Length: 113
Length: 116
Image (cartoon, rainbow over all chains, first blue to last red; front, side):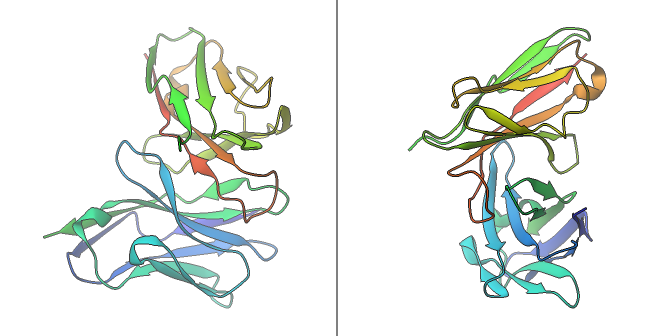
């Protein structure tokens, strides 16, 4: 069975400082991994995805993530936080066959001025 | 173009009532998914359609939950005899093709169900 563990339920940063949201995955085969963002009262939006191509994946709004097989990690980073980045972030793994998504429990990112 | 839409956005039901939640996927999208998101949790898979065929319903929590997509477009998630533990946000997603991790799932805004 596949699963993801998001290591922090809340992360607080100041505007302009780097963001690091941590995710470890468990999968018996090469996984597809995603990060989704959920703003209040809005639908989930795909930030980026890893599907066995380049291990460093660039997404929207300046976010990127690096797939590290040896560490079974897929951490999300951004060099400089913006107030509009405040939201809930989900690390997600999918199985082969069809795209059933398995979500982590989420990390709430708080950005202070 | 229009995204995935869901209705109603909010639903309050008394325990024991039946409810029906509707999802309109993006036009032409073959695959449709339902997820349940409890408060403070990540979404959990309920069921998956490819066109009108329900290929996986392993996530449906009980036989009170039923989903259909009779014409391969609009889908309805029905919950019979609602219980308080059914209170959650129900998310619908669609993707362009069936199968394959390269097909992005586009999510609707969800229906927040509260069972009193």
